Image (tube, rainbow over the protein chains, first blue to last red):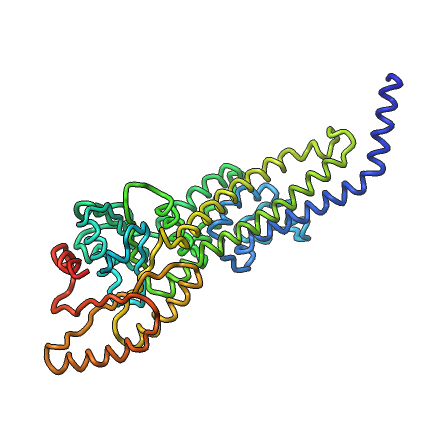
Amino acid sequence: MSFREKLRAFTDGLTEFYAGPYRATFIKARQQEDDLFMMLVLSEALGVPNPASYYTLELLPIVYEDFHAWHRRMGMEHSPLENIQCC
Amino acid sequence: MLLDLIGSTRLIFFGGKGGVGKTTVASSTATALAAAGRRILLVSTDPAHNLGHLWEQQIGDRVTRVRENLDVLELDPAETTRQHLAAVGHTMRQMMPEHLHGEVTRHLELSAQSPGTHEAAVLERIAEIVAGSADHDHVVFDTAPSGHTSRLMELPELMAAWTDGLLDRRDKAEHLSAVARGLAPTGRDRVTATEAPVDRRNQQLRSILLQRRRRFTLLRDALRDPARTVFFIVLTAERLPVLETGEFHAELRGAGVRVGGLVVNRRSPADQGEFLAERRALEEKALADLDLDLPVIQLPLLPRDVSGLAEVEAFAELL
């Protein structure tokens, strides 16, 4: 490893050290936004009347990928939806 | 008279209390316009369709030509919902493991029954028709009784607001994603590298939502544009329809729809004996409560039912 590469690795490390916690915060906030979005899309199935369930339905296939991780994050060990038993 | 009020407005709605003769008036108007050489699409949005009975032929959910320049269509929300669910189901099944396919089907079946699905399906079709073909000069809508229809007229606005809300949430999430990535030292670190699927998903969500919003705003703008849309309230000269007309008018105005006039159907003649003259006096009294600043078109009570081509044509002459 040349001196240049060592120096680059060192500055990268420093950036990560200082910026890391902030980045984690932003990622966490993004995650929470996504979780809220998921809840809006699934509201009808969760028992909250949704005026637009006809339209949220077409978003389901896309958010479904993240569904399992979502209900785990929400503190539910098993899927809260009777009709989507992912685990 | 009615035709003068319509002019070249493309979308013409007829609404009012149940049983006042919306279908008859809408069909006669369509016939009169067609006779004047315009190409007309007559659409029934009432789930209890009557156009078929009136025109004495099977119509259903496909464009059916009943006479020169006049096509008729009866929207079938159940069928529209079924197609929508089939499309969503197809995508979902592709993305989910096979042993869950039964679950998908059951979930979608339940969704088909959920409240609001029906009106959403009707709205979807109206949006399609409004945005659609240049094959017709006018589209005449024979709507469901007032309550349903005023709700239907408010829906595009509500739904546009709803998609806006969801898009805002997506904006925020994507912004946070971008900021987090900006803070990464090299851009090739492990956390952000695994975010590619998230980005792809975000884009899909956004494009679906944007497409929806475009449809809703197109429809809303068309319905609120007085040059493109006119609504006529049909009523009979009796106390309850008159009262309901006042409320209906206020609701339509609230939704930003131009009300072009009132059509008072089945006026009793004054010169056909004491009984009918008395009815007529009663009708005048009921109509006196109608203090809306709108053109009023009066249609007479006929000795026979209006049904079948010849009679609709004869009735159209009265317009």
